[in-house]
Length: 252
Image (cartoon, rainbow, N blue to C red; front, side, top):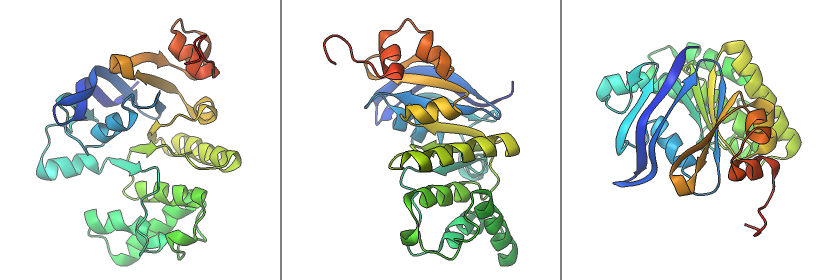
């Protein structure tokens, strides 16, 4: 399997205070890779380091073999264009239409003619089922539509890797399931690698190829595997309780 993301001996945190210590793992091409864990374990911190928003205290983040942690200037921008990101809130610009939001990365990073940028944006909206919503403003969208619009924008530059932060947060079960199906379809049809931070067990069961679980007390990874392995074949009580929605005898 081809490695598209490699995390090497990463110490991650804020300033010089690590929240995550000395973790290493690979993400393979075309898989749906899930990052989970309890509150305060460092899921969002890890994501921010993987997309280059925060510099590592030490260690490396490699995107398709190139070291994002060390890259600067044009080299850094070139690496970042290999990835797309959709944040939990959608982070759409309220003063722009949905179409204009999707076109924004194309305006920032390409010199394509306006007509071509618009055509590409409409294509991305069609991929997420929003081809009739391009002229709406973000405030006119439902929660699920905002998530889809953010995903369309994340795909604007045809990245091979897309990061999703809590994509199902705030969605009803039906809308969440539809978004899960969309992610699976995009991974299958376009070969996109997805890295997803979530705590939604239903989504994890539905879409995950592989999972890493972080734990606050060890400041690192306590389990790696498929949903089935972590749910049924683990000797770690914390992992078992998490996946089976159990509490320990002390009620913790």
